[in-house]
Structures are given as C-alpha cells and as structure tokens.
Amino acid sequence: MSDRIGAPRRWTRKPEHGDLLDPGDRRVVYPQRVGVSARGMVATQHYHATEAGAAMLAAGGNAVDAAVAAAFALGVVEPAACGLGGQTMLLLHLAEDGRKFCLDGATRAPNRTPPGGLKRSAHLRGHRATTVPSTPAVLAYALKHYGSKRLDEVLAPAIELAEQGYRISPLQHYLTRRELRHLRNHSAGALMLKSGRTPYPIGAVFQQPVLAKTLLRLAEAGVEDFYQGEIARAIHADMLANDGLLRDDDLARIPWPTERRPLATHFGPMRVFTFPPPGAGRTLIEALNLLAQFPEAARDPDSPRGALLLAHVIRKANLDRADRPEDPVLFAQELDLGEDITHLDYAKRVARRIKGRLLRNVSPRARAPTHAPNTGAHSGETTHLSAMDAAGNVVALTQSIERVYGSLSASPELGFIYNNYMSAFEYQDISHPYFLRPNAVPWASVAPTIVFRGQRPWLAVGSPGSERIVSAILQVLLRLERGATPFEAVESPRLHCSVEGKVSLEATRMRDDIPRLLAQHGFAIDARDPYSFYLGCVQLVLRENGQFLGVADPRRDGSAAGPAD
Image (cartoon, rainbow, N blue to C red; front, side):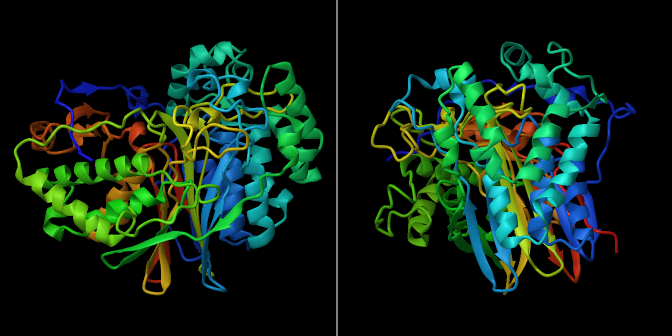
C-alpha cells in the first residue's frame, strides 16, 4: 500500500464565524475559558451547560450527575450540534473500584432500511436521514447506574434554559445563516428560525417552549416514554406523515448503551485511555504510537519539521482507519498483531517509512482509497464535555446529531431535531462492517479520552470535528507532553491532514515557513481562520496539586467552571 500525496495547489482561506465577531458588541457574551476549583470541574462547549454541570457538583452530585446535566443542557443551547434526537458516547473512570470503561451509545439504522439505501444524498436531509436516537437512553443509563441524582434533578437546568431562553452567539448565528436555505425547506426551520424564515440575530433571546414540554415529560414519565410512550407515539406519527423510516418498533427496542473496554497506550509519562470501535480511538492510539518513535526534538508542532511530521502521522492514522474498519459486535476480527494499527510493532514499521519521507524534498504521491470511504470526513457538528469530581470520578462525553442541524427535520410537537446518521454509513462495499443495512451501526469519529499519570486520573479531554477530532486531541496531548500549560495546549494553532493529503491549518498563527515546507513536500494547503470552527473544540479538565483546572476551547462558546471553594 503506497501513501502518496497529491500535488500542491493554490492556498485557500475559508471564512468562518470569526468574521462576524465584534469585540465591542455588548450583545456578545465572552465566557470564562479557564476555571479553577478545589471541588471538581466541568468544561463544555456552551457556558450555560457548564453552569448546569457545576451546579450539580455544588449540590453534592458526582461527575456523572454533572456530565448528564450538562449534556441535556447542551441539547438545548447547542441545537445545531446535539439533542434528544442524537447519539451519545462516553468514557468513565469510577474512583471507588478503579474501573475504566466506555458506554457505547451507538445509534442504529431503522428496521425498514433498504440494504445499501438509495444513495447517500437521499439520506442527508429530511426524515429519511434519521436513525434511532440513543442520547436519552445513554444519559439515563449512566445516571441510573453511576450517578447519584434523580432524572428530574439533572433535567431541571435544561428545562429552565428551554423555557426562559438563552442569547444567540455569533457562532450560532453564523451556523444558522450557513444552513438557512435548508432550514427553510425542512421542518426544523419552524423551530430554529424567527417566524420560520430568518436567523435570530446575535444577542437575541431564543426560547424553545415546545422542547421544554418534551423535557418536562421526560422528567415526569421517565426516559422510557421517549421509546415506548407518548413521545414515541409522536415520533412514529411524525415519521409516518413525512416518509421517514423510523417507527415505533425501532424505538421500542430501547438503545441502552453497551459497556466496553477502552483502548490504551503510553505516551511519555501519560497512560492514555480512549474509545474503541465504532469510535475513532484506534486512530488516536496509532498516532501517539507513531509520534513516540521520534525524538522529542523532532515532535515540536511549532517548527516546520515538527509540523511536517505531524501531517504525515495524522494522515497515515486516518488512512489506516479507513483501510481497516472494525466493528466490535458483528465483525470481531482475529487480527495479526503485526497488522493491528494500535500495536507498537506496526507503529515502528510505519515510522521507518515516515522517516524516509521526511528526508526527501518532495513526498511521493498519495494513494487515495479505491472509493471514498465515509469515515466522518466531512463538515460535521458534534459537542464534547469533560467532568471530574472531588472523589476522583471522571467523565469524557461526546454527543452529536451528526452534521450541522442534523437532518434539519423535527416534529413540531416535540421541539428537538432528528439526527442524520443515515449519511454516516458505508454505501458501496457490501462486505464493509458499517455498510448500510437494517439495524446496522454507523461510523463514529468520537474519541473521548482519559489520561492517567501513575495510578490516578490526571486529565479528561475530547473534541468535536468529525475526522478532525483525533488530530485536535493529539495536538493537545503532544503540547502537554512538551510542557505547555493546559490553556496553551488548547489555544495553540492546529493543523489537520486528510487522507488525500490536504493540510487544513490556522496559518496566520503559525510560522510562515510551515505551510511553505508542507507545500514543498506535496501537501495541498487549506488556510483556515485563526481560531477555526473547522479544527475542533477541545474541552479539557485535569487534577493537579490538589486543584481542578478546566479549559474550554476559545474556538466556540464554551466555558470551564467548578463549585465555588
């Protein structure tokens, strides 16, 4: 298998939400990006969700209570990214028994899915794009088995936010503008647009009374109502009326999460635990193992040679994931350890090839896959949160409705947007583990991660960003290993390399000889905004020297906070 890289092309800059920001605009909220507390910490992509999680800790709840409350709140204040109609995955560490495990909340295709579907574009928007929502079941399961609060208690902040509203941020206004045509043409527009036609302006208070009633119903009747009760009947009727595939018999098989063992590796003094298939933790493990084969001086991401190494590593790890898909349920493979992309022997062999390329002036051209596999390599929307409590419990949670505003469809009686995970399957290779078939599980790019130093958990981290999730987390871990402060590690400029060899990077925040060297080695350069929405949004919490510290990535609307000391 060759690893060729496409010919360089002219640099492009893609305008993002940063173009809308005005530092003097009083309608804009500037959240607290760094939080410190002695009693626990929460970092999320929206400051109101952080407040919900921190309030749970202050009220005596544990990290699971905080994470679940924040996750439900994110479904209200980040409706373009997540919600009751989506999918949730989380990685937990329980201090009492020292257990580390994943809750795999993978969604699944409806029973009436035709094998192979029609074509991906037919399942991109509208009711036919929707799979079985897992978020309510996963959050309720985590709370029941590992939390300490009642469901109505953790739902209270989300209900209040839906009833009373929150202020529209520049980012949310930008995303709504970006999807305006599709929102107007689909049923979510009636909920997300002012009078069903125009985006709410920056600073406007956005209320969701219909969603508030649905959340209140969940609090009173329990999560089973979503799958087997009044809410389920409303979903069934809405899907039936709009030619959707989802039905009451799909919902009745409640998608409780599966507990799985995390993947693990060492990187410097860190012991890294991350999410197994169908998530993308294998990609992170391979990338860390590859970087570990190079001396520390060669791994400086702020130097031209270090950035070049990083581009090679990110690209190779993503290409290997596309070439070697794994499904832990239906397609459990007996892998030769020499070909297991998470194995150190494999990393050593690949690293030797990368070292040879670094010595050449121009890299060989990259082999694209035989067909373009759907590995999440698109402009998607997801949200991540991290939480720790004083007892030592840790949660890293990633959830999504797949692309921005999901399927762009919603029931006017329920108020939440349905996901569009039907677009996240493999559509061409019938032998592929994520080929679209009834009850199949789609690809997932999530990689919630917990890092240990010694015997104690030190760090919880994760990001949104489809295939950029792993590259964002990787660069934060690399910078921390090199001695950066947590905020420096999160805030520093990022790059990502696609399997085709296109490097997207925050070029204006980097040395100008970095993109030049990448271009000389055959990479195509895609210059992004200085704090790019496209390149992930890392939420980080850590415990050190008896204190908790949280960092919310300045690339979105997040904040970090813990209970007042």
